[in-house]
Image (tube, rainbow, N blue to C red; front, side, top):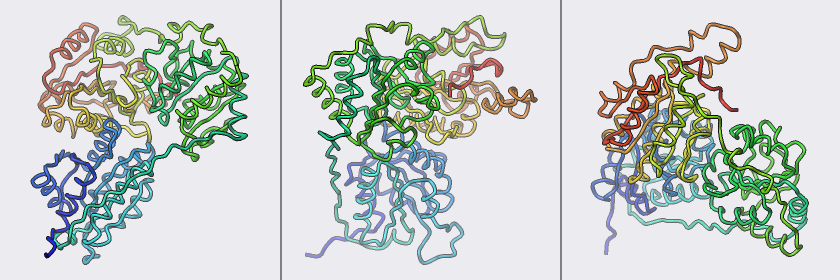
Amino acid sequence: MAESKDYTYQSIARSVLDQGVDTMFGLMGDANLFMVDHFVRNCGGTFVPVAYEGSSVLMALAYSHVAGRVGVATVTHGPGLTNCTTALTEGARGHVPMVLLAGDTPVMNPQHLQGIDQRELVKVTGCGFEQMRAPETASYDIGHAFYRARVEKRPIVLNMPADFMWQETVHEKKVFEVFETPAYVPEGDGVDQAIGMIASARRPIILAGAGAVGARDSLIRLADRLEAPLATTLKAKGLFNDHPYNMDIFGTLSTPAAYEVIDKADCVVAFGASLHAFTTDQGKLMKGKRVIQINEDPAQISFNYHPDAALAADAGLTADNIVYWLDEAEIGPSGFTGELDMKTLTAHPPGQADKAKPGYVNYMYALDRLEEALPDNRVLTTDGGRFMTEVWCRVSAPDPKSFIATTNFGSIGIGLQEAIGASIAAPDRPVVLFTGDGGFMMGGLNEFNTAVRLQQDLIVVLCNDSAYGAEHIQFLDKRMDPGLAQFDWPSFAEVATALGGQGVYVQSAEDLDGAIKAIETRDRPLLIELRLDPNDVPRMRI
């Protein structure tokens, strides 16, 4: 019996479905339009069309984070791929598994107008590159790209020459299993050294990063055994919600009282954290204390800070192992939590409504009100910019999977796209985005209507100080005119309404009451524009 043949574009679409993927983000062009059409019409997949190529990558990154599955995006060749470089770098530095199906110019036309060396372009972003070698290897190459994304925990760009698409091939399902046996250190000098430091500590703190979000119960068990408070890095925000000794975020984002307690601690046991400079406050918070770093990725150990002891191991299994040996040695608890007033440690100074000048709203007061008014089951996303550190401190998220901070590359203008991707991953939950005016003009404006078209439950809080804030502060610090950093933007609330959403303008505490009512009655994407005094916005906590 003769084998049935497909065209390559059909095999590509089927291969994506074979990987368990039913949602794809992208923008169609010459090299991918037939594949997308087959994915939707014949494979039953969902295609989310974007306005700008880089948005598709950002949406897929957020989808991967919230859904816990490999996100997929597709763009065409040349400028279609160059428009994705910032987004790809964000994903690579955030260690997010996703696959970008990128078209390439025809092999038989080396002088194509849009031809570039796409492998070299991808290389500089830190992402992996996979070349589709021939029509008959399409399904294998796609299966291997997905395998690499899961194992390497970064975006993989699959390069698809346009002239392969209408060549015949025989489709064969190729799904490669990922073997994820936890890395565990059951014995050895490193374990003995780490346990010895922990056992002798009088004021220990348990710190969890993004690499330890799956070990919550084990880390709590260890903290309770030691009577040690719990804290997280920014990326693990919300991991220990509701625990009585949760100190929230560790480092420059701590409350003043918590910062003092951390400074006085004598031991930090860090699980799944790279100990970034913001976490350690440039190393200041680690002085005078023993630091034990546990990370399953050896490359992350000592990447930012050299600990006193380190284990390349699974967070949960290692925490359980430490508890076991503490019990075996009959080591008593530290009693550290008994010294702490947790209500004081986690309370940020409240905002004051009357502090704002006429025509503006006090930012911290607005955040405090919004924290109470926004839906409890929200997914919280934030763009970059000087507004965001106060959001991270004052606005809560249910858990780390419900929190996305687009901080990996220091870019602004990528938050709204990730909010849309998060909403696709969690369609029954409201998604909240905090963004700045510059970031929204840079990347949010062109996709807000996408949220409208998709009828998403999206709440955008736009912090408008009519300036690029980081530059504004630097001009003021040098006693220079900040005028070049200031912009006369249009009314974002009116723009949101014109794009099919609902816009609410807030320039007073009374207006904020109206915005909160709009949150309760929303029936379309809602944008709340907070009018802020550029000279009264808190500095970034970095």
